[in-house]
Length: 360
Image 1 (cartoon, rainbow, N blue to C red):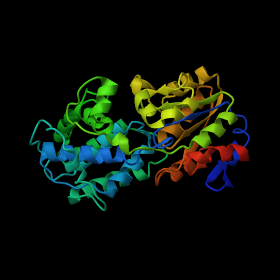
Image 2 (image 1 turned 60 degrees about the horizontal axis):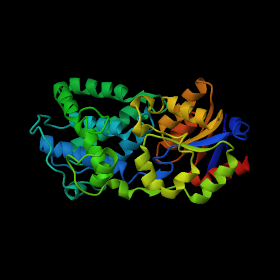
Image 3 (image 1 turned 120 degrees about the vertical axis):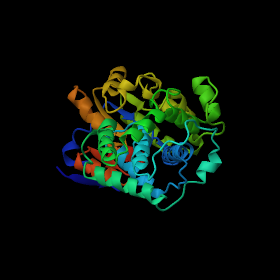
Image 4 (image 1 turned 90 degrees about the horizontal axis):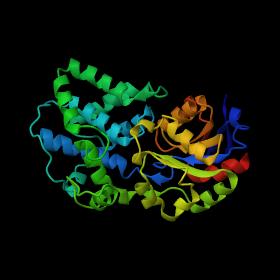
């Protein structure tokens, strides 16, 4: 099967031309699809990494562009829908490459965000051990792109490396310092993530508590809309059963950014995994199946930008849905994965969707 260019920025798998003509509904991912999160999630990962290295291990560091490449690669492996998992893996990879992995402190002081933003810059990360770590994790995973890998799969690679370096016990100590990744408040890493992302007012609004580590504006303020209202208006006329959202976000975070555009989506049929059990995290198809059941849809296009989105449609199809992926090119590994695993359509951005269906 090969791809056909049907317009600028749009590729469609020739075998999918007929399949996509009569879809019932269009269901959207949120992060990287409807919203640009490049200026929040990857930045939060760099900040949390710096906090751990500096406050627990007295390591002076600078996190550079190589972190972004490793971050993007992990996001395309399928088992990393939630970015807390990505941040955890990158922190563990960096940690085992440090010259000295002895714990120096056991608690985190109040966060001065400006201080940690000053530790982030362009070029390669420093010290050289961090650059080496990021090169290592990229080299280990690049050839596996296209295989479905979970966080545990990658952790086993890290454990094997740590054992050879005689750092396994220290690695386990680091994991205890990170704690559970879900939900908010259960572990240090997830608490830091939510507080830096949502900000103190967001934490109070969503969770009804006072933040533990950070008091200030959240990096969610850096996020911006990708989707245009004109595109949503056209898509509403194309999909007879309507539009919906299946996202790892919660409803609060989604509505904050989408605002009035949320009314284009059937929110009763939408599934916001951030507000529900982690057991339905993508690529688990239960969320998509529930969404389609409420819409009354059997043939759908799911629009997403990550590896988990592609594996989600495949798993849902095994369960009886006719689910097809419109994959968006958001990072350097997107095109390789989507073409390798034959995503039904590939688009440069979400606003080309109306043009795709018009051409069909």
